[in-house]
Amino acid sequence: MTHVDPSIFKAYDVRGIYPTQISGEVARRIGAAFVDYLGAKRIAVGRDIRLSSPEIATAFEQGARARGAHVTDIGIVGTDVLYYYVARHGLDGGAIITASHNPKEYNGIKMVRQGAFALSGDAGIKEIKEAIGAGAHPALATPAGAPELVSDVLEDYARHCLSFIDKGRVPRIKVVMDAGNGMGSVAARPVFRDLPLTIVPLYFEPDGTFPNHPADPLIEENRREIMERVVSEDADLGIAWDGDADRCFFIDDTGAFVPGDFVTALLGEAFCRKEQGARIIYDVRASRAVADRVTAAGGTALMHRVGHAFIKKRMRDEGAVFGGEVSGHFYFRENWFADNGMIPALVLLELLGGGHKLSQLLAPLRQRYHLSGEINSKVADVPRALARLEERYADGRVTKLDGISVDYDDWHFNVRASNTEPLLRLNLEAYTDAEMQRHRDQVLELIRG
Image (cartoon, rainbow, N blue to C red; front, side, top):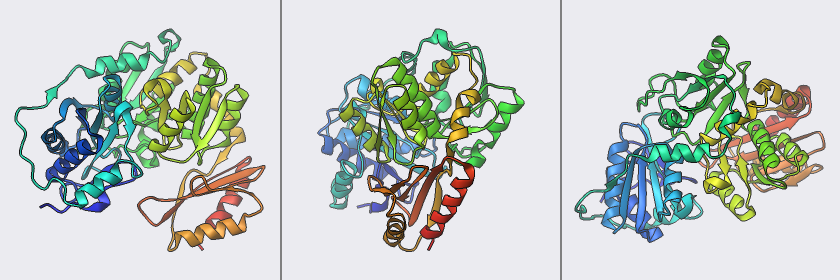
């Protein structure tokens, strides 16, 4: 029986290096355990463009079918397309074979239950890990027949995404789009095809070797080219997607990167204008710009812990219309509370139809809110470092929703531990750049001991 490395079971998905950690045999057993856990009768499976994805997808499907599930294979799609298909068709669950923004040697599996509600380390992934660790499904007969193949998913998906906006409000502007050879282009073509945009495509050819740059726009060097191209093309906007296209990132008309919490603030405000008293969810790392803008627009901003499984649950509990994370995940009630990489781009384009450039919309935020960005520090003793922070900043408003957050009237910070490494992640904000730098350096000195 193939040994399954328990470290591949993460907080939000299964992920590891192919083929030493994740292989066809491992995927087959996970597929069987997934169906057993859900008691699923009907599921969908999609995959990204990685070279190992066909093998992993086929094996997962075999395991699922061996346990009695009807499997619909929706082909090569982004993660958000899989979410859409599972929820739209009322399936019992689904899986997308992807390692998102990780390097090409990785692969993984993101799994959802009915309604595209994500399995997590707290509910679902833990049980699948335990079942496989106990030796479940060491040998299963290969099921007869084949999965149902569906190839017309993207046009329906595009219509769904476009239902979020008034297409007549989208301005005639030039947009640079960087898919990073990942899955962004697959959905972007039908979604943006009939809008009055001049599109400059970068790396729209899906290629599982990611030959141009890693598909992780959160890393500055990976977005450098689109930032330069927005300027050289005299474009109005840049849009970049991560490898599986469930996150999107923006570059303004000056070529500057737009932090995810500023995007959350702008989109949250826009939804509050459309729906009186709207509830907006944001994560503990975010700028105060989110709560300030949402509150000023008559909405209610609710802070929550980081992570898509947690944000989606809070949104369902609150009936929140929109949610956003600093990491570029954006969630929508009318998208079954799931994250999506195309809808935020459409809503932002509609927002630009008001006649302002993105840099103009962002100017008040950049003048008032000065962000450190996320800074990672390796530490020998995570609990001790957190205790030092709590003791030093005991005169602030201390909360422990996710890691430790400390609020003062004119600055605040959050420090969270990594799920997988001995790292602490700092996000800090102040109302002047000088104060941000001063407090940032003091907190980092304490973290690093």
